[in-house]
Length: 245
Image 1: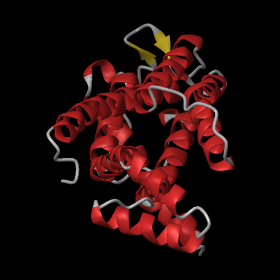
Image 2: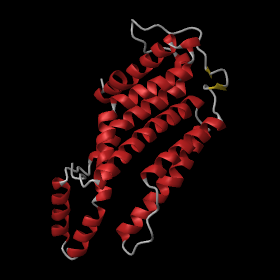
Image 3: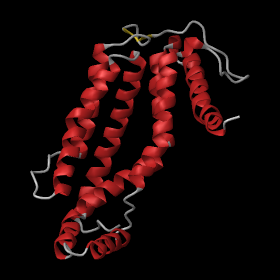
Image 4: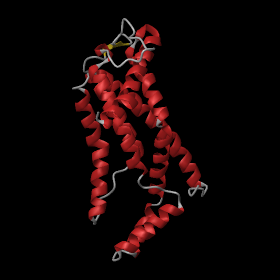
C-alpha cells in the first residue's frame, strides 16, 4: 500500500467529503451551496492560526523593507554578510520568511481535495463513514438560482473579482520599475498576483462546476475580511511604535 495516497485520502479527502455530506443533510432544503459555504468557513477556521501568522509575517516584512534595502546597499559587495544581517533583522523582529511556504504546503493538499470533491460531487457517493448517510434529495441549485453541478460565468466572475480584491488589499500599489533583477522580479510578481492570477481563476472556474467557484469566492471573502482587520490593527500598532511586538 502506498502510504501517501492513503494519508491524503483518509486524512484530507474523506473527512472533507463526509463533512460536506453531513452539512448538506442538516442545512435547509439540503442546499449543497449553503453546505459549501459552511465547509469553507470551517476549513478557514482550522487553518486560521497558520494564515494569521503568515499574514503577520507579510506585514512585518513590508515594514522592514527600508531596513532591508539599507542593509543591501551597505553590504552590496558582500553577499554573505548581507544575508547574515538580514536574517539577524528577521530574528530581532520575530519574522520567519519561510512561513508563507509552509502555509502553501499545508493548503495545497486541501485545495486539491476540494477540487476533486467538487468535480465529482456528492452524487458520486462512496467514501462515507458508517455514521454518515447521504442526504436525499440533494439540491444542487444554490438558493434555487444557480446549478452548482455546472459551470457558471457569474460565479466565475465573482471568484475572480474576490481574488482581485484580496490581492489589491495585500498589494495596493505596483512597485515602480527598479534597476536590479530583484526589484524587477518583485514588480513582475506583483503584477501577476494582481491581474494574471484572478484571470486564471476565472478561466479555471468556467471549466469546473460552479461549486468550485462558490468555494473560491467564500474563501476569498473570509481571507479579505481577515486581512482587512489585521492590517488595520497593524497600522495602529506601527503608528504607536509597537511594530516590533
